[in-house]
Image (tube, rainbow, N blue to C red; front, side, top):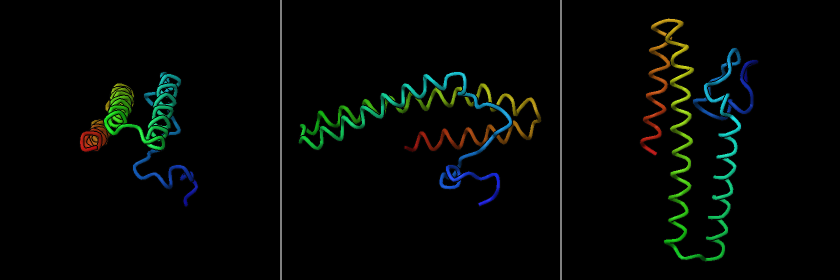
Length: 114
C-alpha cells in the first residue's frame, strides 16, 4: 500500500482521493448522510420483513422504494460532481476537463446498468 492510499480506498476500486479540495457534495453532506441513514433503516426493515415471512409483493414494494431512494441520492451526487468537480477541472485545462467528463460518463454508465 502506498503512502497516499488509505485502507478505505485500497479496497474500493474507482475511489479517487482529492485531498486538496472539498468534493462537490460537501455542502450537502449532512443531507446526504441523513438520506442514507433513512435508506439504511429501510433496508433493515426489509430484512426484518423477510425474517418474518412477509408477503413477497410487500417485500418487493419496499425494495423498489429503497432502489428509488438510492437512485435519487445518485442523481444528486452526479449533479454535484458535474457542477463542482467537472467544472473546476475544465477551468484548469481542456485535458483535465475531458478526463473528468469521461470519469462522470463512466460513473453514469455504471448507474444506468445497475
